[in-house]
Amino acid sequence: MSRSGYYAFLKAKKTRYEREKRDESDFKLIKNIFDKSKQKKGIRQIKLYLATEFGNTMNLKRVYRIMKKYSLYTKVRSTNPYKKMAKATQEHKL
Image 1 (cartoon, rainbow, N blue to C red):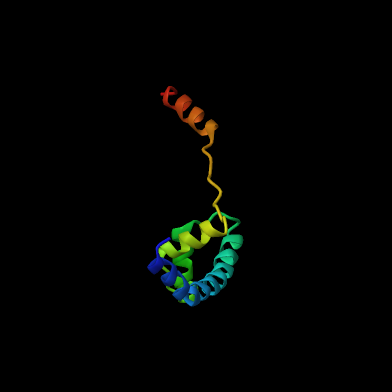
Image 2 (image 1 turned 90 degrees about the horizontal axis):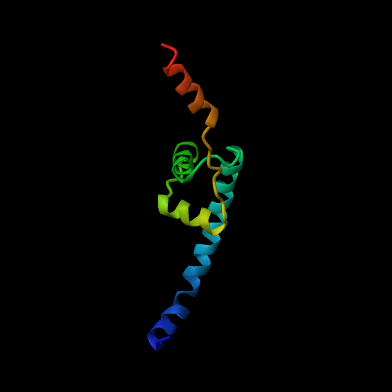
């Protein structure tokens, strides 16, 4: 590590600490919304919900970073295989 990089790291200690505290408070909000939606709301929906309900404008990248940091992942909906089969059989009914 370079000398200037080391001193820049030491100088930024306070800002890193403040960012951590802000992330923890934002995480509580995001986690609350995430659990209410039964882990189905993604980054964009959480951002919109924060803006409309709480009036808290948070950047999309920030929501993404916090969700990734605390490993909050949405459940991915799988397709229904029977729906395709039902659609295929109805095409030949005519």
